[in-house]
Length: 78
Image (cartoon, rainbow, N blue to C red; front, side, top):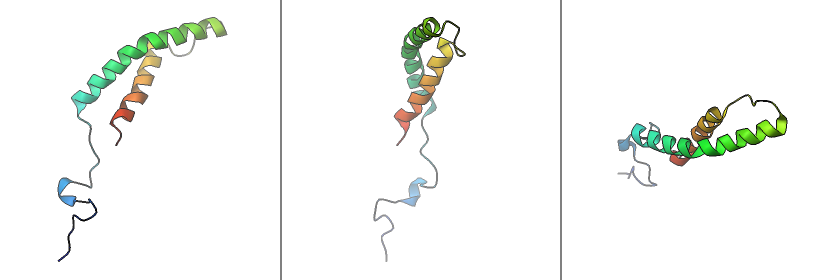
């Protein structure tokens, strides 16, 4: 008889499915990172406005949203 759990692979826990992040925890982290990213994005937006002398394509909220959207999944990546 062979041991199917040898090597750390156990199919009884749904190994065919990817690890799913709890929605509530993900959105809590996303909102916290978004709130921290808003002032940083606003400063970067203002610097780009002064440097380039025209409005950047994306505003500070869009930039903060994009940064939070990139950082949050990286936290939950296995």
